[in-house]
Length: 196
Image (cartoon, rainbow, N blue to C red):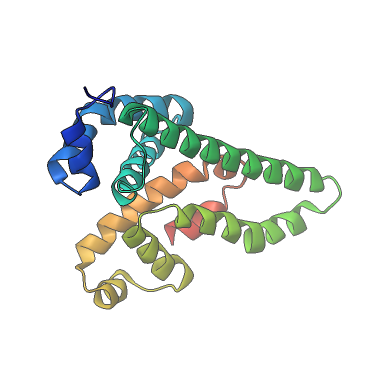
């Protein structure tokens, strides 16, 4: 008798042993449903894709230690739920910090506030957003934004082509825009850092 409710014993055993077909079977069966759930809570296609990518990466990396006794569906939903809760908690903290900063405008000269924001807080939030990017996009952003390297210099340093650098940077900027969308509404000066 099968002890697992949503797949057979062989699939679980093969998944634990790192068989790609077993992983693909799980992915094919659940990725659309998981994406739909993530999108419903995160309200962003890219963030929903990131959530599903994270979930399946975690499944693959920890396949030997996960317990599948309550079924893989239950396990995947738990991983996704925790990821979404962490994302929403992070958003809440960012908005609280922005609210506190906005309240300080009443007590400070607006120009001084904006200058302090541009120099300190903007870099902090931009760095948090960059840290969420995939590794190659993250590295390209840091080399471009923090070190001011040209596309050619980045391509030479990373051993990739200039069009690849441009493509990754363009995709990264789209992701960063979504991440700090609320900041842009209040402080258009943010674009100076992203466009340069």
